[in-house]
Length: 163
Image 1 (cartoon, rainbow, N blue to C red):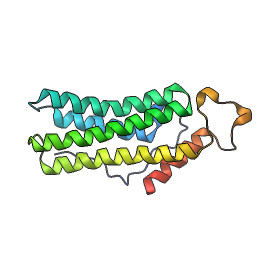
Image 2 (spheres, one colour):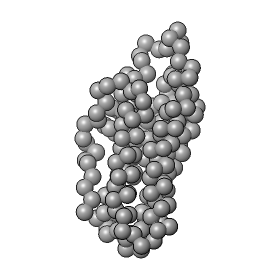
Image 3 (tube, rainbow, N blue to C red):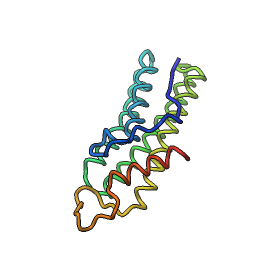
Image 4 (cartoon, helix red, strand yellow):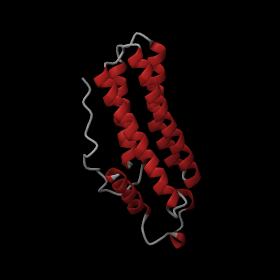
């Protein structure tokens, strides 16, 4: 049986966001990876096992890579790729349930987690696109808005958990 945290859990965003590991979207994507690895451990189809695991890892990897690139445009690009990988995971879950590697309950919980992660990324993208922040690479104090980037990201995450 798969146990996933409820989506109403509080978002641990009290500290400033200085690295990708501080991002709630990355933390949720990491939970998705853990779940995918756990349920796919005994699958006979190694190709499907490898593909779904790689897709799940692609979500956290692209969030991290985009964040580290340092520009708003590159971060957005990699966030879109991460969201696409969430869709890939959801699609592959259908193949897994069709081959009876997953029961309906596990399938539903994993689909919910992958969909939730995808929606979080989408809301993060929407909020990030509206902001005036250009990325770490172009971070100049004289061009910053009154809010810091950390506060801006925290607000986006808080808003996404209420929608």
